[in-house]
Amino acid sequence: MRAAVLLAGLLVGCSRSSAPPPPSAPSSSAPPAFEVAYREPADVFEIVDNVSRWLPEKNEPEYRDAWDARGLGAPGDDALFAAYARVRSRSYPPEAEGDVLVLGHAKAPDRFAEAFYRATTLEAAYAELATFLPRDDVAVVRRVHDTLRPRLAPLLEESRAYASLASRLEARLRDPAVSRFAAKLRAFHGATDTSPLTVLLVWWPDVESTRGAKRGSFVLVRAHPVAHAKEAVDPAVPIHELAHDVASHAPDAAKRARAATFLAGCPRPPGVRAVALLEEPLAVAEQKVFVRDVAPDEVDFSRSWYGDPWVSTFAKLLYAPVARALDEGRALDETAIRRVARTCAELLRTAKSVAP
Image (cartoon, rainbow, N blue to C red; front, side, top):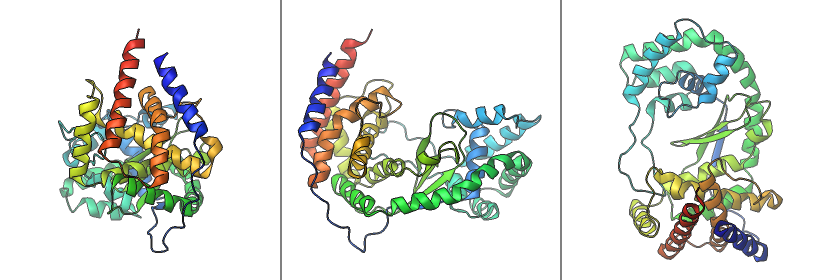
């Protein structure tokens, strides 16, 4: 009941709010927020990296499920993937333990992955790997790709459609509305040193869901090139990852002060990842403000906004105040963080009171 009251109050507040003032045109010198491309080395890497299941808690299970469903497995794959896992794990950056940042956490770069994200050919990717991996390790990676290449062929053939989709998505992300929104985000988070993100379209099976993921300065759009063509060119997906990126570029002292203030008002429950407590709901709310700017009718409170109920519900509660702050050019200051923390604490109490 209390959750319903909270959401009802939010919806009333949204219905009474006035339309945002027309935004001013972006500066002609403002850099683009995104570059978009399809790169086969990134595609090969993502498919193999996930199909290998070298790190199950990181790998997307949909890849291996689709691989097996298509009958692409073969005898000897277990040994092949085990060799790949040994190489892959040697350069993978460990997660920082005990980090209390609830907004703006930046992961250490995954140099192995980024070698393929940047490269236009597999040979170029192998050459970059050789700058930080032993020669024998690079040879293992090459052998894995060469062995799997015939079986990757039908997936890469489907991926040929990504070239035109990338052009369409880039055109949509060059819209001045995107530059204006990026400027709003930078002002809100106090970030000044952001650089363009490179959006890469990578193969994804024909399943119900689509995914976006930020990997350093790269954004992966996982959407099947035929079944999900509409979702593949949706600018809201990169905008969500841009929200994460801008938050990560706030000054470290500001991020830690915000975390301390927020956690004082809404302590993190056991087992809840720091990023899921505040950063993910806030990024979803910011994404929906962008959707409101370009397609107001698509902001639908009756549908889930995220696969996780906590993130979806908290994002809906954050939407109205975040929209006002972005429209007015206000920064995420200590007073605003305290208010957000009170909303978080109330939502947690509501969840506990209605739990079976």
